[in-house]
Image (cartoon, rainbow, N blue to C red):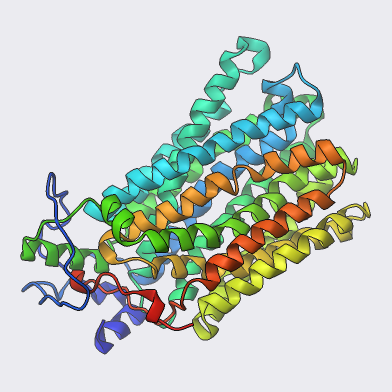
Length: 493
C-alpha cells in the first residue's frame, strides 16, 4: 500500500479504492491461480474510484464489535447454561457430575461444526465478500439460539429433547465458525498497518463482551428467581432475548461498506482474467505452514479461556461447594476487565510486535493455572475473582494481537479461508475438549492440579508454534494478487 493509501486507511477508509461496478457479484465456476511471488499487476482503470456510499471507519469497527458481541453472547449463553442447568433439564437420569459431563458434550458439538462454518463462509467470503457472510452468520446464529429457548425438556419429550439441543448447537457452531474471520478481516482490511493491532482487536473484545452479557443475564435471572422457577422457565428468557440483539446487529451490519482491500483484489482478478483456484485449495497447497502456526498459537489461548470462564462455574459449585452466584460474579468481573485489556494489548502489539506479547501470554497462562486452582480452593470470593481476572488478562495478551497476527499470515484472496480454518480447527481440539477433559480429570483425581498440568501442556504447544513463526507486524495486507503470499521466514524474528 502506498503512503497516501496508508493515510487514507488510517484516517478515512471511506476514501479507499473501490473496484468497478459488478465486481462483488459471485464469480460462479471460475477457477484461477495466483501469480508467483514478486510479480505485480497494474490496477484496473477504476480501481481508485471512491466508494459511492461508504460507511466511516468507526462504523465498520462498531459493527464488527456489536455483531461479534451478539454472536458470542449466543454461543457462551449455551456454555453457561450447560454448566448450570442443562444437566438437570436434558440429562436428568444421571449423577450430577455425569450429567454435567453430558451437557458439556453437547456443548462441544458446537465446536465440531465451527471448522465447517469457517470453510464454507471462508470460501464464499473470499469469493463474494466479507460483508455478505457477516450478515448471514449473524442471522443463522440468532435463529438457532432463539430456537434453543423454545425447546421442550427431557421430561416432556424424552430423547428428542437432547437430539434437538444438539442440532441447534451444531447450527450455532456453524455460524460462529464463519463469524470470526469476516469480523476481524473487514476491520483489518479497512484500516492501515500502523494501528492494525489496535483496531483489529475490537472485534476480539466482542468475545468478553458477549460472555459478560451472557453471564450477566443468567446471573440476573438466577439471582431474582427461585431455583425451581429458573429451571422451569427462567433459563429460557436469555435465549429468547437474543432475537432483539440479532435484529440490532443485522441493522448495523447491512449498512457498512465492503472491505476495500477485497474489492481491489477482485478488480485485479477480473481484469487479469487468470484462473483462480478454490480458496481452500490454495490454503492447503500454499499456506499449510501458516495454518499450522495459527492452530498451534490458538491452542493455549482457547483451552485457557474455556477453563477460566466455563469450567470454573462447575469447579466452584461442585468441587468447592459455593453458590453459582459466586462463580458468575467472578466471571462477570474478570470479563469486564478483559473487555478493556484486549484493545490495550492490541495497541501494544503495534509497538512491540505480535510475537513477544503472544509468547508472554502463553507462558503466563501455563504458570497461572496452578495459582488459579489454589486461589479458588481458598473459598474466598476475592481470591476466586483474582484467579479468574488474572487468567483472563493473561489470555488477553494472546487474544488482543491475535486478529492482526492471523490476518497477516495469509494473502488477500485466501485470507478469510486461511484465518478461519486455522482458528476454527484448533477450537475442535482445544476449546471444545477443555471442559470435558477438565471435568473428567476432576472426577478422577478430585483436584485442580492435573487440570493445571493439562493447561501447562497446551501452553507449550502454543509457545512452540509462535517461536516457529516470524514477526508479522510490518506486513501490508496488499490487494495485489501477484504479491499475495510473502514468506514469513524472512519477516524477522
